[in-house]
Image (cartoon, one colour):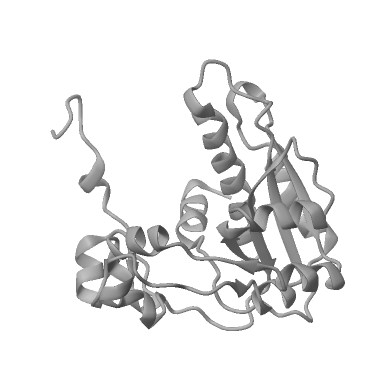
Length: 235
């Protein structure tokens, strides 16, 4: 792979929100490549502050899919500020998300003012129908030295995820992060179900599988001139 192939792989990487083909398993060698990529993710002081649980047992996936998760008003309000309501606005902003990805109820005035009561809902078919779910665990005891709130340790998880994501993309696999797994009270229920020790925290979950359909969502990014300065900020 040359540098242009690598750059194209980085550009092609995306969050796969479409359903996965539950009848198409992931080759164990491909899964091993993804886990090996995680092993070589750079972590602060080589602390390697993570663990991974591979869930591929259909009965366990079904149990997880039936657990309830909640959406807070803060989550809705803070996301609302990032939304674009037309394709042209989205292209101009070059950041955030299109409003079309949000349920209509989240776009109401009631939701903006934090008065929307969103009922608990199960994680559902997106978890039960996929062939593999990866749970990324964070070990807060493996701290990077002198790092406020273990900022370097948390940042290290991002490096590990990027390695895994790019390897999945190289194999044609869909990769979708489900942050709800790291939120309470859901995280506590998952820890009990999977015998995860209390010394570890669930950072997030990852749906992994072969997309069952095409994803034609518009994707935007800032150009380098929008965020790069030379020698002095703003120049």
